[in-house]
Length: 195
Length: 70
Image 1 (tube, rainbow over the protein chains, first blue to last red):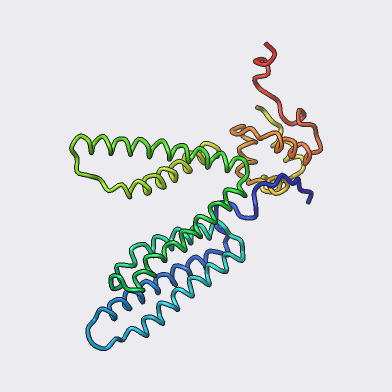
Image 2 (cartoon, rainbow over the protein chains, first blue to last red; image 1 turned 45 degrees about the vertical axis):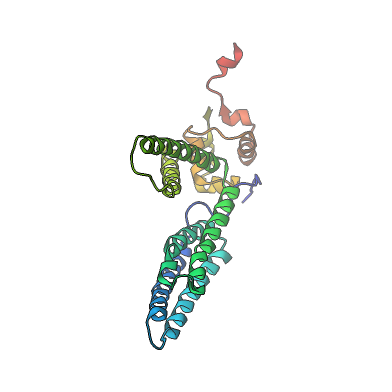
């Protein structure tokens, strides 16, 4: 088969490969085992008397190792779409996990920094997808970002105006969620346009 | 812009996925070009012409040429 090298669109698109489906499930199971064992470790450390945390620590390590192994398999496959989903899931799973550990302990610091690893995976795979996207996919992403930006701007302005008018102070952390959600809606709309 | 992509592809018995692989783009892009929802860039148009061994103007036809002729 003859190819025209245009340097666009790599081996993976915006959907994960079929082979990565089981790995995503394994990653989810590993993360769930880790979270349960980590929470049990935190409880064991907080409990008075002799500590029985060791089996839970072992469970945490095993869960994390299973999740990392599944991610490594997707990494070797260069399935950026699956890695992006794994990063997003991992970030959501590990966010707020530090509350399960005793406050100020090394375990809490580890849990507080842990979501940064899947966030880095998400960012790296997203950049790689953007680099490998073809011209239409780039246009769709551009339109989605523009939509997300405009919607977020309107929501932020509305929130600020309501706050100035006397509504209780809002927690602006959720603006990141609004931006992500609006971009997601933008992707769906732009995809429909070019379907 | 009108194009003869679907006809040329059918003549060669290629699926959209086959053409997409030859061009190094997604199937969605081939479909969007065929249906006229998306006009390809100049490098991609040259790529399409090369794949079909034709000139660009044998594949693509501008629909609003009269605007330029004024």
